[in-house]
Length: 267
Image (cartoon, rainbow, N blue to C red):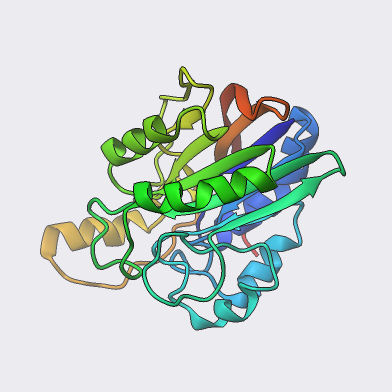
């Protein structure tokens, strides 16, 4: 089976490109399931209930999370009833769930887990416990519910992402990094059969500074003026990876990067 994991959907440009290009990508690569990170989908920061519903109208199975997912409280009303995750390892009594499992086409049981890193992530989106401890506590439960498991590891530090991937190698089918909005070129299959990439990249405007208007970002660096960021609008593309998984072994066969440019108008 083939899972398409899509990097952070950023603002309206990212949502529009995702909506328009996803059917073509699914058909071209014979995709069975789609997972997308949506923590920046509303105005480049956070996720609202209306935006989440808009994205879920596309053929996507699960929306994963990050440090901005819960900033708009309207999303809380959907966390129990829709396939929208929040980081599994958030500390405290948090609405929603950190993993989601379903049976795909009546044959293969798939689980997606949303995790958040700790390194350089202090003060963003609430406190999180060690992702290593958190995954050890829940993985035996998930393994009973799923044939293949994909983890979205939302973190800043590449070292933490790679450590986590090595830690779960052979126990899950894939670990895909998100958060930095820059697609990395280190996709590989680890010795135990776990597919890995440090960052899926960004689905949004790339003629920007990680999605934000480049002139405003440059102005901030030059002057220290905290002028409000705005979502950029040019160079829009969809980024992610396609992972071929073996549902009999729970391991990955291959992983390849996906990039698709979009030339329409944001509406």
